[in-house]
Length: 119
Picture 1 (cartoon, helix red, strand yellow):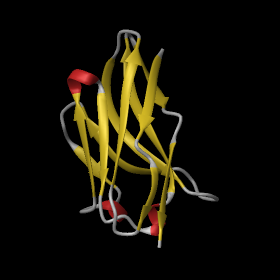
Picture 2 (cartoon, rainbow, N blue to C red):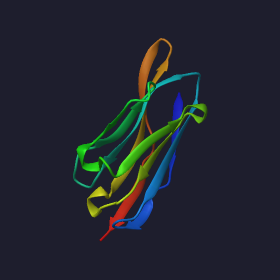
Picture 3 (cartoon, one colour):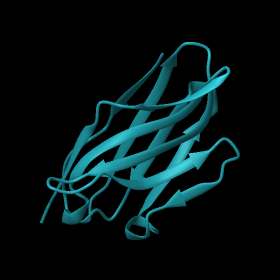
Picture 4 (cartoon, rainbow, N blue to C red):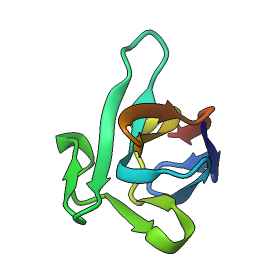
């Protein structure tokens, strides 16, 4: 089992910034990819940003140039720096990990952290 613990959500005014953190812990595992997803009320969960073990990154078009994903392999942690926040960024943000616990791969999710951007 792998646990993902998130922190850093909150309330911010439009144009402001927040930094989300997520740390993975648990059984012996290899992280293949880490990422952030979000789900707004009444909407489907959507990808925000991902980073692979090879340090490649992928962003949703709506956050390009405003959000930056990074990782600390020594801490099994992933971060999401969110700048120039907009009200439409309001959602519950979930950390995701694609993990191998030999010989199988698994998906794990954090508990979610609320991000609210006021006008």
